Length: 111
Image 1 (cartoon, helix red, strand yellow):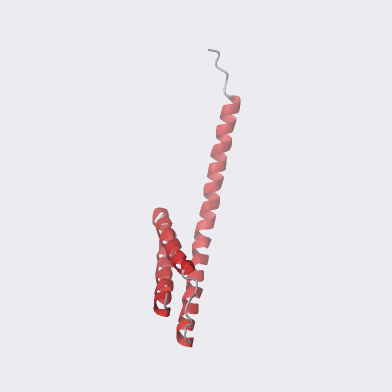
Image 2 (cartoon, helix red, strand yellow):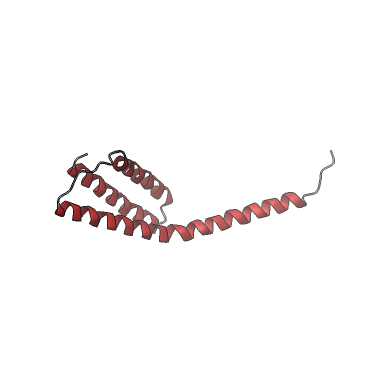
């Protein structure tokens, strides 16, 4: 992968994390999951081509700037999704406990 391809891949990841952030802000969870999968595929491309070319100073600065923005988007996405995930986990735990109690105290049916 040459330097242009590498930067295009980082740019595609940045665009995707931007869309992910918008999806999280709008509670579009299915869209967020789909975009997360796209981001994972793009990241795999970088991992598979881990011998990145040497970039000149300008391109390296652009790459670093993109990575910082990707990380900032990721932090914002986590700030939105983690409380929601905790709330969902609490709901699931409550439902599970309720079901367990109902099962424990249901009368035996003598057949």
